[in-house]
Image (cartoon, rainbow, N blue to C red; front, side, top):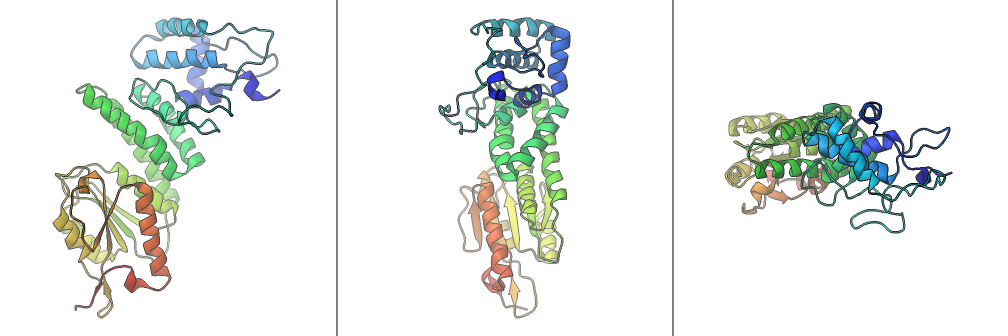
Length: 350
Protein backbone atom coordinates (compact mmCIF):
# COMPACT_ATOMS: atom_id res chain seq x y z
CA UNK A 1 0.00 0.00 0.00
CA UNK A 2 1.38 3.41 -0.91
CA UNK A 3 2.85 5.44 1.92
CA UNK A 4 0.71 8.46 0.99
CA UNK A 5 -2.44 6.55 1.85
CA UNK A 6 -1.15 5.89 5.35
CA UNK A 7 0.02 9.38 6.19
CA UNK A 8 3.62 10.48 6.67
CA UNK A 9 6.41 9.24 8.91
CA UNK A 10 7.59 10.86 12.13
CA UNK A 11 10.77 12.05 10.40
CA UNK A 12 8.81 13.66 7.57
CA UNK A 13 6.36 15.41 9.88
CA UNK A 14 9.26 16.64 12.04
CA UNK A 15 10.93 18.23 9.01
CA UNK A 16 7.66 19.86 8.03
CA UNK A 17 7.19 21.33 11.50
CA UNK A 18 10.80 22.36 12.03
CA UNK A 19 11.28 20.16 15.09
CA UNK A 20 13.42 17.11 15.73
CA UNK A 21 11.89 13.61 15.58
CA UNK A 22 12.90 13.27 19.23
CA UNK A 23 10.64 16.20 20.11
CA UNK A 24 7.67 14.59 18.36
CA UNK A 25 8.30 11.30 20.17
CA UNK A 26 8.63 13.05 23.53
CA UNK A 27 5.28 14.77 22.99
CA UNK A 28 3.75 11.38 22.35
CA UNK A 29 5.29 9.78 25.42
CA UNK A 30 4.62 12.66 27.82
CA UNK A 31 1.38 14.19 26.59
CA UNK A 32 -0.33 11.59 24.43
CA UNK A 33 0.23 13.51 21.17
CA UNK A 34 0.19 10.43 18.95
CA UNK A 35 -1.38 9.34 15.64
CA UNK A 36 -5.08 8.56 15.91
CA UNK A 37 -4.64 5.38 13.86
CA UNK A 38 -1.66 3.07 13.59
CA UNK A 39 -1.23 0.54 10.81
CA UNK A 40 -0.41 -2.79 12.37
CA UNK A 41 3.18 -3.89 11.90
CA UNK A 42 4.28 -0.47 10.62
CA UNK A 43 5.94 2.61 12.01
CA UNK A 44 3.78 5.54 13.05
CA UNK A 45 2.04 7.39 10.26
CA UNK A 46 0.57 10.85 10.75
CA UNK A 47 -2.65 11.77 8.94
CA UNK A 48 -3.68 15.34 7.99
CA UNK A 49 -5.67 15.60 11.23
CA UNK A 50 -2.62 14.42 13.20
CA UNK A 51 -0.43 16.99 11.46
CA UNK A 52 -2.95 19.75 12.23
CA UNK A 53 -2.75 18.69 15.89
CA UNK A 54 1.07 18.84 15.83
CA UNK A 55 1.03 22.23 14.12
CA UNK A 56 -1.20 23.58 16.88
CA UNK A 57 1.12 22.06 19.48
CA UNK A 58 4.04 23.88 17.85
CA UNK A 59 2.17 27.16 17.66
CA UNK A 60 1.07 27.09 21.29
CA UNK A 61 4.40 26.04 22.78
CA UNK A 62 6.17 28.67 20.67
CA UNK A 63 3.88 31.32 22.16
CA UNK A 64 4.74 30.24 25.72
CA UNK A 65 1.85 27.93 26.59
CA UNK A 66 2.99 25.07 28.90
CA UNK A 67 3.33 21.80 26.93
CA UNK A 68 0.66 19.96 28.92
CA UNK A 69 -1.93 22.69 28.27
CA UNK A 70 -0.85 22.97 24.66
CA UNK A 71 -1.27 19.22 24.18
CA UNK A 72 -4.84 19.33 25.48
CA UNK A 73 -5.77 22.20 23.15
CA UNK A 74 -3.99 20.57 20.21
CA UNK A 75 -5.96 17.36 20.62
CA UNK A 76 -9.17 19.38 20.44
CA UNK A 77 -8.01 20.68 17.05
CA UNK A 78 -7.71 17.14 15.76
CA UNK A 79 -11.15 16.26 17.08
CA UNK A 80 -12.61 18.95 14.81
CA UNK A 81 -11.55 16.93 11.78
CA UNK A 82 -13.85 14.22 10.37
CA UNK A 83 -13.53 11.03 12.47
CA UNK A 84 -11.09 8.48 11.10
CA UNK A 85 -12.50 4.99 10.64
CA UNK A 86 -9.98 2.64 12.24
CA UNK A 87 -10.96 -0.03 9.79
CA UNK A 88 -10.26 2.14 6.76
CA UNK A 89 -6.52 2.49 6.17
CA UNK A 90 -6.92 4.92 3.28
CA UNK A 91 -6.08 8.09 5.20
CA UNK A 92 -6.00 11.08 2.80
CA UNK A 93 -2.45 12.26 2.05
CA UNK A 94 -1.15 15.38 3.77
CA UNK A 95 -1.46 18.45 1.55
CA UNK A 96 -3.47 18.90 -1.65
CA UNK A 97 -3.67 16.08 -4.23
CA UNK A 98 -0.93 16.10 -6.86
CA UNK A 99 -3.40 17.00 -9.62
CA UNK A 100 -4.99 19.83 -7.62
CA UNK A 101 -2.12 21.84 -6.20
CA UNK A 102 -2.81 24.81 -3.96
CA UNK A 103 -1.95 28.33 -5.15
CA UNK A 104 1.83 28.80 -5.10
CA UNK A 105 2.50 25.07 -4.69
CA UNK A 106 4.34 22.97 -7.21
CA UNK A 107 3.01 19.52 -7.97
CA UNK A 108 5.64 17.95 -5.77
CA UNK A 109 4.08 19.66 -2.76
CA UNK A 110 7.16 21.73 -1.94
CA UNK A 111 4.97 24.66 -0.91
CA UNK A 112 2.27 24.36 1.66
CA UNK A 113 0.07 26.81 3.52
CA UNK A 114 -0.10 26.68 7.27
CA UNK A 115 1.02 28.40 10.46
CA UNK A 116 4.60 29.56 10.69
CA UNK A 117 5.10 30.33 14.33
CA UNK A 118 3.07 33.55 14.18
CA UNK A 119 5.39 35.14 11.61
CA UNK A 120 4.19 36.99 8.47
CA UNK A 121 5.44 34.39 5.99
CA UNK A 122 2.87 34.40 3.21
CA UNK A 123 3.09 31.70 0.51
CA UNK A 124 6.41 29.92 1.07
CA UNK A 125 7.95 26.47 1.01
CA UNK A 126 7.08 24.18 3.88
CA UNK A 127 10.77 24.13 4.83
CA UNK A 128 10.62 27.89 5.34
CA UNK A 129 7.69 27.47 7.72
CA UNK A 130 9.59 24.75 9.53
CA UNK A 131 12.61 27.02 9.88
CA UNK A 132 10.42 29.84 11.18
CA UNK A 133 8.78 27.57 13.76
CA UNK A 134 12.14 26.31 14.95
CA UNK A 135 13.44 29.87 15.20
CA UNK A 136 10.47 31.07 17.26
CA UNK A 137 10.99 28.14 19.64
CA UNK A 138 14.73 28.95 19.77
CA UNK A 139 15.35 25.35 18.72
CA UNK A 140 18.92 25.56 17.45
CA UNK A 141 19.41 21.82 16.78
CA UNK A 142 16.26 21.70 14.65
CA UNK A 143 17.41 24.72 12.61
CA UNK A 144 20.80 23.10 12.11
CA UNK A 145 19.30 19.87 10.77
CA UNK A 146 16.75 21.63 8.59
CA UNK A 147 19.32 23.97 6.99
CA UNK A 148 21.64 21.07 6.19
CA UNK A 149 18.82 19.15 4.55
CA UNK A 150 17.56 22.14 2.57
CA UNK A 151 21.01 22.96 1.18
CA UNK A 152 21.60 19.33 0.24
CA UNK A 153 18.22 19.05 -1.46
CA UNK A 154 17.82 22.38 -3.26
CA UNK A 155 21.30 23.88 -3.52
CA UNK A 156 22.40 27.30 -2.36
CA UNK A 157 20.35 29.67 -4.52
CA UNK A 158 16.94 28.09 -3.97
CA UNK A 159 17.68 27.54 -0.28
CA UNK A 160 18.54 31.20 0.17
CA UNK A 161 15.77 32.71 -1.95
CA UNK A 162 12.91 30.44 -0.89
CA UNK A 163 13.77 29.29 2.63
CA UNK A 164 16.40 31.36 4.45
CA UNK A 165 15.68 34.88 3.20
CA UNK A 166 11.87 34.70 3.63
CA UNK A 167 12.28 33.39 7.18
CA UNK A 168 14.79 36.15 8.03
CA UNK A 169 12.52 38.79 6.47
CA UNK A 170 9.51 37.55 8.43
CA UNK A 171 11.43 37.63 11.71
CA UNK A 172 12.64 41.15 10.91
CA UNK A 173 9.10 42.33 10.25
CA UNK A 174 7.89 40.75 13.46
CA UNK A 175 10.71 42.44 15.34
CA UNK A 176 9.75 45.83 13.89
CA UNK A 177 6.07 45.36 14.73
CA UNK A 178 6.64 44.26 18.34
CA UNK A 179 9.28 46.72 19.46
CA UNK A 180 12.06 44.72 21.09
CA UNK A 181 10.22 41.42 20.74
CA UNK A 182 11.77 38.61 18.71
CA UNK A 183 15.29 40.07 18.90
CA UNK A 184 16.56 36.79 20.32
CA UNK A 185 14.79 34.91 17.52
CA UNK A 186 16.42 37.07 14.86
CA UNK A 187 19.88 36.70 16.39
CA UNK A 188 19.69 32.92 16.72
CA UNK A 189 18.24 32.41 13.25
CA UNK A 190 20.88 34.69 11.71
CA UNK A 191 23.66 32.81 13.45
CA UNK A 192 22.45 29.44 12.20
CA UNK A 193 21.93 30.70 8.66
CA UNK A 194 25.40 32.27 8.69
CA UNK A 195 26.90 29.02 9.97
CA UNK A 196 25.22 27.01 7.20
CA UNK A 197 26.40 29.46 4.53
CA UNK A 198 29.99 29.53 5.77
CA UNK A 199 30.02 25.74 5.90
CA UNK A 200 29.13 25.75 2.21
CA UNK A 201 32.02 28.12 1.45
CA UNK A 202 34.51 25.92 3.30
CA UNK A 203 33.22 22.72 1.71
CA UNK A 204 33.37 24.21 -1.79
CA UNK A 205 36.54 26.30 -1.42
CA UNK A 206 38.15 26.74 -4.83
CA UNK A 207 41.86 26.13 -5.25
CA UNK A 208 44.09 27.59 -7.93
CA UNK A 209 45.61 30.90 -8.93
CA UNK A 210 42.60 32.65 -10.44
CA UNK A 211 41.94 36.20 -9.26
CA UNK A 212 39.34 36.12 -6.48
CA UNK A 213 36.06 37.94 -6.03
CA UNK A 214 36.19 40.47 -3.18
CA UNK A 215 33.00 40.80 -1.13
CA UNK A 216 32.67 43.75 1.24
CA UNK A 217 30.04 45.82 2.99
CA UNK A 218 30.46 49.55 2.51
CA UNK A 219 31.54 51.60 5.55
CA UNK A 220 28.86 51.75 8.28
CA UNK A 221 27.01 48.76 6.78
CA UNK A 222 26.58 45.83 9.16
CA UNK A 223 24.28 43.51 7.16
CA UNK A 224 26.50 40.67 5.94
CA UNK A 225 24.13 37.72 5.39
CA UNK A 226 23.33 38.54 1.74
CA UNK A 227 27.06 38.72 1.01
CA UNK A 228 27.59 35.44 2.86
CA UNK A 229 24.95 33.88 0.62
CA UNK A 230 26.78 35.21 -2.44
CA UNK A 231 30.07 33.85 -1.10
CA UNK A 232 28.48 30.42 -0.71
CA UNK A 233 26.96 30.61 -4.19
CA UNK A 234 30.29 31.55 -5.78
CA UNK A 235 32.08 28.80 -3.89
CA UNK A 236 29.41 26.34 -5.02
CA UNK A 237 30.29 27.31 -8.61
CA UNK A 238 33.97 26.76 -7.92
CA UNK A 239 34.95 30.44 -7.97
CA UNK A 240 37.50 31.88 -5.49
CA UNK A 241 36.11 34.27 -2.89
CA UNK A 242 37.53 36.67 -0.31
CA UNK A 243 34.90 37.79 2.18
CA UNK A 244 35.78 40.94 4.16
CA UNK A 245 32.47 41.31 5.97
CA UNK A 246 30.83 44.27 7.63
CA UNK A 247 31.75 47.97 7.50
CA UNK A 248 35.02 47.73 5.58
CA UNK A 249 36.94 51.05 5.83
CA UNK A 250 37.74 52.66 2.44
CA UNK A 251 41.48 52.47 2.98
CA UNK A 252 41.30 48.77 3.88
CA UNK A 253 39.20 48.03 0.80
CA UNK A 254 41.63 49.94 -1.39
CA UNK A 255 44.58 48.04 0.05
CA UNK A 256 42.86 44.67 -0.48
CA UNK A 257 42.00 45.46 -4.10
CA UNK A 258 45.54 46.62 -4.90
CA UNK A 259 47.14 43.59 -3.21
CA UNK A 260 44.92 40.90 -4.75
CA UNK A 261 43.96 42.29 -8.13
CA UNK A 262 40.44 40.79 -7.95
CA UNK A 263 38.41 40.01 -11.03
CA UNK A 264 35.34 41.53 -9.38
CA UNK A 265 34.40 43.50 -6.27
CA UNK A 266 30.92 43.31 -4.79
CA UNK A 267 29.90 46.19 -2.52
CA UNK A 268 26.82 45.62 -0.34
CA UNK A 269 24.61 48.46 0.91
CA UNK A 270 21.38 47.75 2.78
CA UNK A 271 20.12 51.34 3.01
CA UNK A 272 20.54 54.50 1.00
CA UNK A 273 22.32 56.16 3.91
CA UNK A 274 25.27 53.75 3.60
CA UNK A 275 25.59 53.68 -0.22
CA UNK A 276 28.66 55.62 -1.38
CA UNK A 277 28.89 56.12 -5.18
CA UNK A 278 32.24 57.88 -4.86
CA UNK A 279 33.72 54.84 -3.13
CA UNK A 280 32.33 52.58 -5.85
CA UNK A 281 33.89 54.79 -8.50
CA UNK A 282 37.21 54.76 -6.70
CA UNK A 283 37.26 50.96 -6.55
CA UNK A 284 36.25 50.70 -10.21
CA UNK A 285 39.16 52.91 -11.22
CA UNK A 286 41.78 51.05 -9.17
CA UNK A 287 44.19 49.68 -11.79
CA UNK A 288 46.55 46.75 -11.35
CA UNK A 289 48.58 44.37 -13.45
CA UNK A 290 51.64 44.68 -15.68
CA UNK A 291 52.49 48.00 -17.26
CA UNK A 292 50.81 48.34 -20.62
CA UNK A 293 48.15 45.77 -19.76
CA UNK A 294 46.59 47.12 -16.63
CA UNK A 295 43.00 46.36 -15.75
CA UNK A 296 40.47 47.26 -13.08
CA UNK A 297 37.93 45.05 -11.36
CA UNK A 298 34.31 44.65 -12.34
CA UNK A 299 32.36 46.42 -9.57
CA UNK A 300 28.92 45.11 -8.64
CA UNK A 301 26.65 47.32 -6.52
CA UNK A 302 24.49 44.94 -4.50
CA UNK A 303 21.67 45.61 -2.09
CA UNK A 304 18.68 47.95 -1.89
CA UNK A 305 20.85 50.82 -0.70
CA UNK A 306 22.15 51.37 -4.23
CA UNK A 307 18.67 51.74 -5.70
CA UNK A 308 18.93 55.49 -6.09
CA UNK A 309 22.63 55.62 -6.90
CA UNK A 310 23.53 56.96 -10.36
CA UNK A 311 24.68 54.33 -12.85
CA UNK A 312 28.20 54.62 -14.22
CA UNK A 313 30.03 52.85 -17.08
CA UNK A 314 32.36 51.16 -14.58
CA UNK A 315 29.75 49.66 -12.24
CA UNK A 316 26.81 47.28 -12.49
CA UNK A 317 23.79 47.40 -10.21
CA UNK A 318 22.39 43.98 -9.34
CA UNK A 319 19.10 43.12 -7.65
CA UNK A 320 19.27 39.41 -6.86
CA UNK A 321 21.59 36.61 -5.86
CA UNK A 322 21.13 34.85 -9.19
CA UNK A 323 21.96 38.03 -11.09
CA UNK A 324 25.16 38.52 -9.09
CA UNK A 325 26.25 34.91 -9.62
CA UNK A 326 25.61 35.10 -13.34
CA UNK A 327 27.46 38.41 -13.71
CA UNK A 328 30.54 37.12 -11.90
CA UNK A 329 30.44 33.79 -13.75
CA UNK A 330 30.31 35.61 -17.08
CA UNK A 331 33.28 37.69 -16.01
CA UNK A 332 35.33 34.55 -15.37
CA UNK A 333 34.21 32.99 -18.66
CA UNK A 334 35.49 36.03 -20.53
CA UNK A 335 38.79 35.96 -18.67
CA UNK A 336 39.29 32.21 -19.13
CA UNK A 337 38.59 32.59 -22.86
CA UNK A 338 41.64 34.81 -23.09
CA UNK A 339 39.88 38.13 -23.51
CA UNK A 340 40.84 39.68 -20.19
CA UNK A 341 41.11 43.11 -21.72
CA UNK A 342 37.37 43.02 -22.41
CA UNK A 343 36.48 41.95 -18.89
CA UNK A 344 37.15 45.31 -17.32
CA UNK A 345 38.15 48.87 -18.16
CA UNK A 346 41.76 48.93 -19.33
CA UNK A 347 44.30 51.24 -17.75
CA UNK A 348 47.51 52.01 -19.59
CA UNK A 349 49.10 54.27 -17.05
CA UNK A 350 52.28 53.42 -15.20
